[in-house]
Length: 200
Image 1 (tube, helix red, strand yellow):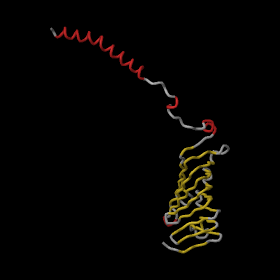
Image 2 (cartoon, rainbow, N blue to C red; image 1 turned 120 degrees about the vertical axis):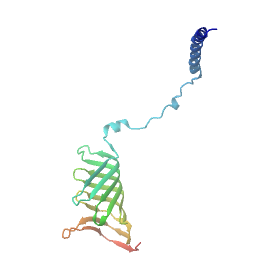
Image 3 (cartoon, rainbow, N blue to C red; image 1 turned 135 degrees about the vertical axis):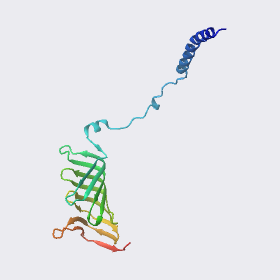
Image 4 (spheres, helix red, strand yellow; image 1 turned 180 degrees about the horizontal axis):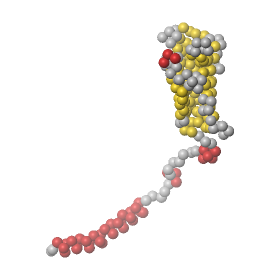
């Protein structure tokens, strides 16, 4: 048998066998397919679509700048919502603030669960589980903190407790300000200050 004749027979057989195989595969797909289960559908996110459409939100916003004293600051939050009447004012959740370049090479870190930022005036009002920590070893807890990051001043109007390199401390309020006469930065504890001196 010649090569051409063998090739012709193979082509003729393939023309019959291959369509039959394709038909068998398609039939098996329909026969083996189960009835769709609505309960096994792809899960969807449970979100309040109307609320998302009504409220503008910023996810993980970050702001940075430099104070009048040359210290750099950065502000971050998990979520922020602009005020409907003034978009420069943001209500935020889980904020963190870092102020670097303080006197003596000190860096200040502040965290809070809730807060309000005025990006125009560069001021902050923090509340709920406010934690204040410095790179020099001071660690404080309180309920509220107000800050002017542009002018580099802090004010804690609520009682605070904490610990530093000098020992344990409690006070009714605290402020970080600048001495007008000398220009030095001052950290002042006020109102029934108690210090348990226990240096590390």
